[in-house]
Structures are given as structure tokens and as C-alpha cells.
Length: 110
Length: 119
Image (cartoon, rainbow over all chains, first blue to last red; front, side, top):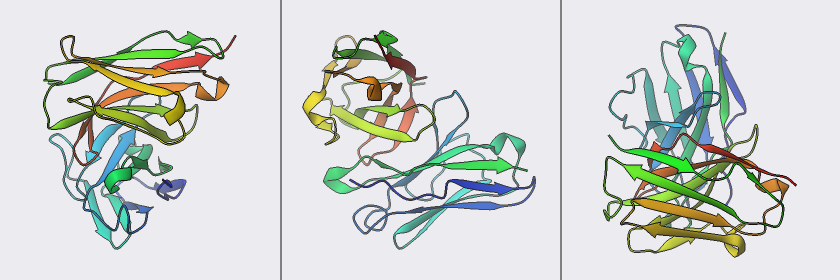
């Protein structure tokens, strides 16, 4: 199965908002409301930030939000903080071929 | 609190078998509510889902590795394992294990273990 498409980089200043996109197809992102987002700091394991497109696990700040339109999902980080600088990966359920990640986006806080 | 911990050799010779085990604590590995996944990350690269196993032993392997891959489950030890056969340098990566919901949400991860394939 093909990887989901993410921009390689994104950036914003402290306090600003930044949105990261994740584009798939009608067989994955567009076909199911099961998009997840993961945050990964250098040398650390990924951490679940958003699941089922819009839901946040306990402990994840509400500055992180998710949405979806058609075959594209988005992660928005509002009120950027220095600790938000990390790599972000999306993934989507894809039916019998599930297990698809995006290529990752490096978020830089300027 | 569910915790996962990978264990296994950090160095494997080319053509040999890469074997890793993931030990689960703080939760049941026999629950039908979850799959148990292996994911890897090549140096400075993105995440690659290798495969997963269900409590009943059913498995899914990513097509590119299917011919060299085996994932097994030992519920009595609360462990699941990965065997990747005939490895090459391209299998050098950090390997993660993770608990996975029925719709692919990886909610708990191990810390990851670096496996280097080199003679």
C-alpha cells in the first residue's frame, strides 16, 4: 500500500498556529474516520496525539486538534510552544490493507 | 498503565535472523480488543508498519517483508515476538512494538531498540 503524503516540513513562531496535512485516497483517509497522528521527539518513541480524526487521548493538550476533508486529514497545533518541535506522522486505517503511515513532517518552532 | 518493552540483540550478521521480543505489562495480551504490532524506523527515515498479531494467532505482514517475516504470541509470558530472516544492511533500524486498536490506533509503544545488521 502507498504511504500517505505529508509535507516534509512546517514551521511557526511561538504562539502561532500551524497546520500539517496528510493526503491519502478514498481507500484510506477518505474512506474511514480512523486517522491518527503521532508526535516523535528525537531519540524517543512516537506518542499518540490524535485518533479517530479528532479525538485526543487523555493528557494531550487541547492545543492539538484534528480534522478531515475528503482524502486529506489535518493536524493543527495552536499556541505553538517550544516543546512542540518534533516530527509528526499521520496514519490511517485502510481496511484489509491497514497499516499506512505518512512520510512525516518536521515541525520547527522558530 | 500498559507498558511494552522490546528486547533482543542489537547486532545481527547479514543473512542471519533478527529476533526480538516484546513484553507487555499492565494489561492483558489475550484481549480481543487489540492487535500487537511491530513497527520499524530506518535511520533518519519515517515509520514502517511491519506487521501485527491478534490474540488468536492471526497475523498480517507487510507485503514487502512477508516472505522473510514471522510474528508469534506467547500469552502465558505476555510476550509477542518478531523473527526476520535473511537480513541485510537495509534491515538496520529501530524496531518498536506497540499495542494497536482494531482500527489501527497505536496507543502504547515500547521505547524502541536499535538493531544493526553488520558483519
